[in-house]
Image (cartoon, rainbow, N blue to C red; front, side, top):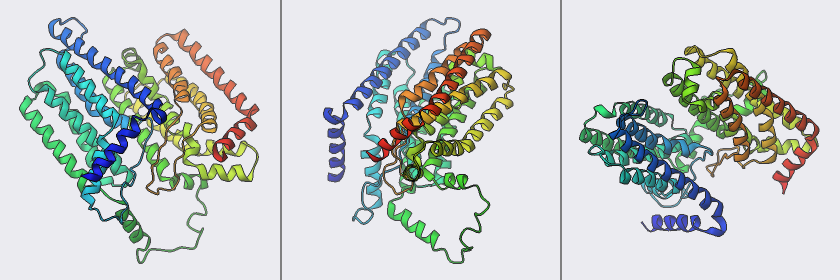
Length: 462
């Protein structure tokens, strides 16, 4: 308990240090204001829909279902976006503490003690205190869903950090079952629903402690794997002689693969949900939710991974910076490492659209134009601003952030295309403008290679 209280004290005092955390305080204040406004607006809309069944207005039960989904999804989504952090070892494996105590410290002091969790609770309380006529048991349901979302988010990060794929699969199944259950919110008996959610929360907490690992466990398992008797030992270089060296580098960078996999998974999941639920044609879907075009485009691939590219491959970048004085090799490597991920994104996106018969010439042109913009923006961003990410999984904090400026520079054009998708002339003009901007940026990169290289050297060696 003393260790837990000390960790909580350190986190709280560090957070409220205006000298070192004024940016974080400002951003959290804005996020709290946004969520507070969102909660009040939902409450007012719920009250109005309860008393005025106007055409086109969502029914109260649909609003509650949306509220429940947001409380379940938001903790996981914001835990992994816009930066993905692997678990940090809190206590040395040689320190005389039990694994359950270390897992408790990790869950409470590092997981639950987060500002955004308090903001979620503020959002929920604002909705509950302003709404009238809520069904019985609604507050308990919403609080349980929020708790499940938070614990599931921490469990998912723990499972990904320690490569516990069985735990990851269990969490994914529970997540899908809960989402399906929320869709039938109106058909559930409040007492039975809350008891089921409480049992789910207890199971999640139990799974968290059951699958929790420490650095000592991982070191031991890795040693056993490396020393496995009878393992084939070919001559060095013979088994990989004919393999693509760039693919080998990508395949050997676990943090990069984890973040890339998480980004693509969330893109495909959210895209599939909107495409399959919002309409029978892409025009119909975009007329209801224009922002989903941001998900169809490769924006997440670039903003989540490739705007921070040299943070993952810092050893490769340093090697080129030391051995050469030209940005050309850096840019070529960027494109070599981008190609496999981009092909995956394009194939998966096309497959989902083809299944729903939504792949047409307009969306292909849109994808090509946004890709032409994303590539130079990603190159410039990776040379100008990156966040250090250990290339070797050494159980230190890994943070793969990206520049918000460059992220929004990709989101805004994609969002604009979504709003203009059904306006043929304006859509064509927007595509032409994006293409011209992309070509201009390519020319800028070609003429300012030395400037980009100097900026990258300053970031690495200053």
